[in-house]
Image (tube, rainbow, N blue to C red):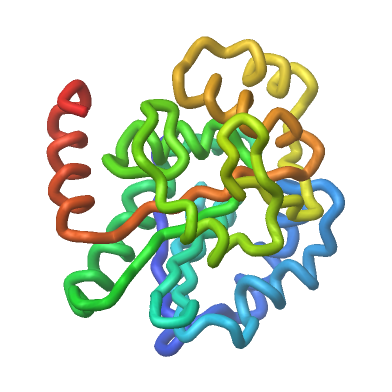
Amino acid sequence: MKLHHLDYTQSENWLNSADKEALLKLISASFNDVDAEQYFTKYFSGDDAFTRKLRLYFDQNKVVGYCLITFSKSKQDVLIRASAAFYPEYRKGGNTFSFSMKQASLYWLKHPKQNIYYADTMLSPAMYRAMAKKTAIVWPSYNSQSVDKALFEQFNSSGQISDLLNLRCLLDVGRRTNYTEQEISRFKSSNKAEINFYCQVNPDFDKGNALFVIMPITLKQLLLTTIKLINPFSA
């Protein structure tokens, strides 16, 4: 299904009251155990980020999804985080990949000497697969890439250690993606490498546990990811 979109920057053209109401409805429909107003305040207007980028997805005039990118500081590092939600019938992991990586790449091009990391608390196996299939360097990964454990201790200090990986890559986020029992069952029995890995590392994703994922934003990452997108069998 082809959707159209609009892009926003917090310092230039942020959300009006109609946009907010549409997002509150979407958040309520997308997550269980979440107060939509508190969620909106934390992610869309909190003071922990120095800038935000947002893409709203529309089916005709109805907001059916969003991808929010926030930029914050952690010590000397820049941490890029993402938040996304779609109504069930519009959920396709590829919807947000291009926007997320575009914003990360543009920031790197303007600040190539900074240490920049894209980090995401992924509640959805499908979202993890969408990113891991297209991004060259992803921690943790099913293909056993070496991991900088210190970054997980720094960025996910309140998280839990995975017994499988001995890595602080899990986090109880207090909300659950609104999946059906059938969808959860399909994920847990999937033979797709990325989804199978996700479910092994984070078997309680349906109970509010997220997989904390880090992707370094470097020249190497951008080059290898471009190659992987051109030839997905190269990696």
